Image (cartoon, rainbow, N blue to C red; front, side, top):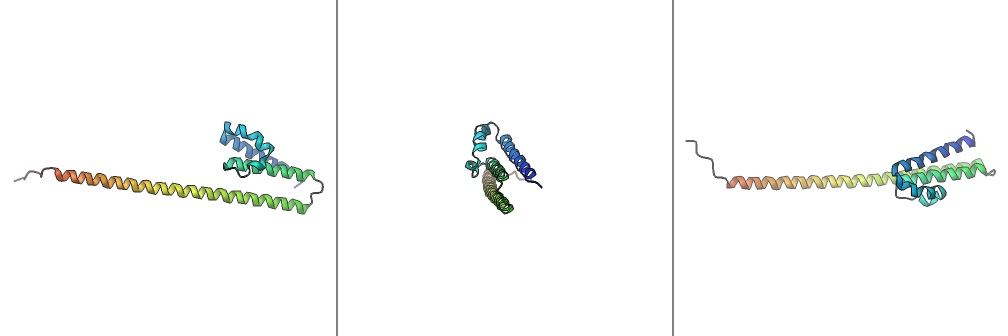
Length: 143
């Protein structure tokens, strides 16, 4: 694969990530987009995953573009660059998975608390009904 083909793939990935952020965030992204495109490094650690991913993809593209235009870029330097990008993506993925796991745990706790509250409410209602039935007069003797 030539450097041009690799650069065009990275450019397409960058454009796709920015488009996904724009689609996912709607008008809110419009105010962020010019800044993200100009200085993506400022958005790498953004708490919104769509913005962080778009920033990372844009930064990868800008780095690759610089590398492609730098005639002194050696294959070893390109390998280091690629390795760094892979590591950055793996770290971002691990962080995302951790945040998802934390949210799932929170939702599970809420469900358990909700189940316990429903169970307690059913017990209270049952006790109330039992106490009310004890207040009823006994049924007439059939004899």
